[in-house]
Image 1 (cartoon, rainbow, N blue to C red):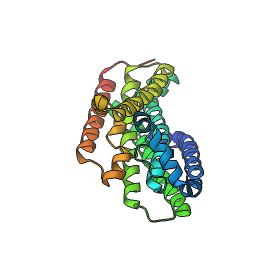
Image 2 (image 1 turned 60 degrees about the vertical axis):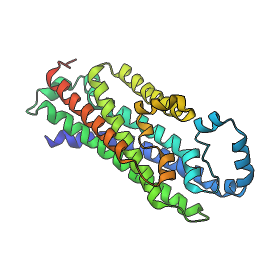
Image 3 (image 1 turned 180 degrees about the vertical axis):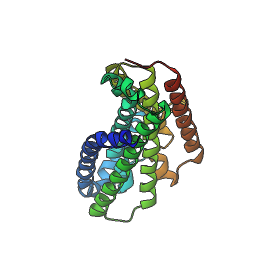
Length: 267
C-alpha cells in the first residue's frame, strides 16, 4: 500500500522544510560572526577561563577555542542544533500513531488490506528518511558557511562525523517517540511528554558533564553517546556507543511493533 508511504512523505515535507530553513539560517547567522569573534580570541579565552569550571562545562565552554571553527560551532550553535533537531525527531516519531488516533483515521487504516506491521513500516521509514535528509542538508549548509568564513584549515571528517552522530541521536528519538505514541493515546499529552523528555535527557547530558559525581547519568541520555565534543577531541565516533544506540533503537522499534500488533489502539 504505497499510497500510505507517499502520503507520509507529502505530509512530512512542510515540517522538514521549515525546520531545515530555520536551522540553516541559524547556522549561517552564527558562523557569520566567527571572523569578528576569532579576532578577539585572546580576550574571550581569558574570560572563559575565568568562569567557574562547572558553569563552563554546563555551557560546553570548557574546551572552547574561539580561533577553531569546529570548537566555535559546537559551543555556540551545535548544542542548539542538536537540541532542536532532537525535538523535531521526537515529535515526528510521536506522530506516527497518535496523529492517526487524534484524526480518527486509525480504524480506517486498519480496515484496509494491509498488516499492522506494514502500517508502522510505511509511516516510520519516511520519518527516518527526513531525519537523514535534514542532517545531510544541515551538513552542507554548515560546510558552506565554514568555507565562507574560514581563516585556516579545519577537519571536514570531524564535521561529517558530528552530523552522523546527530543523525543517530535523532533516529533514537524517533524510535522513542514511536514507542510513546503507542503507550499514550492522547496526542496532546504525548506531544508535551515528548518535548519534556528531550529537555530532560538534555539536562542529564549537561549534568553528566559538570562533575564526575554525575557521570553515570550519561548512560541515560542519547546526547552523550554521540557527543560532538568527544568527536572534536578524538576524531571518531566511539563504536561501543553506536552499538548501544543501535540496540536501543532495535528494542524500541521491535517492542512498538509487538504492542501495535497486539493492543487495541482504536479511538
